Length: 144
Image (cartoon, rainbow, N blue to C red; front, top):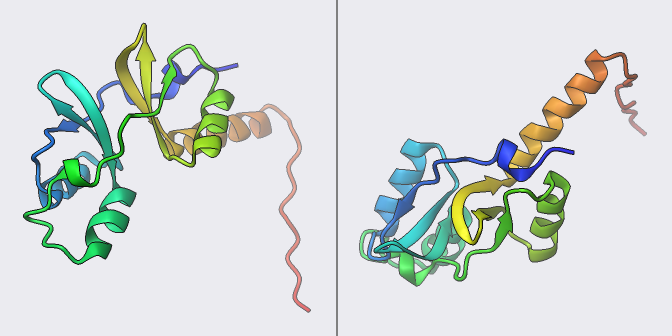
């Protein structure tokens, strides 16, 4: 069974707590990521996600250039050890209702894993099983 460390993003992006929502969104877009760790100095104080931006900032109607990530971030960060299985990560995300987990090694953050990472892993796994001679049938779609 594969571990979280095999599919995690080993270079998670981060911003400071006083970063504006607009700036954080631009950082996410340019980095092609859906979450940013929020660090105060070297201390990890939270995580801000694309969902946080939509639900807690945009939906509030407040000016995104003035609202900071510390006002909408999730804290504390949900984490999983790097040697945990990918199925464990999936179960944890489902149980906690989150789409991103910080990955730790000995208590220190070493990466991040997202639902997207899980989907890509399971897609590659399914494709390799089919290539190895497994059977697969397309679902039948019918109309009433």
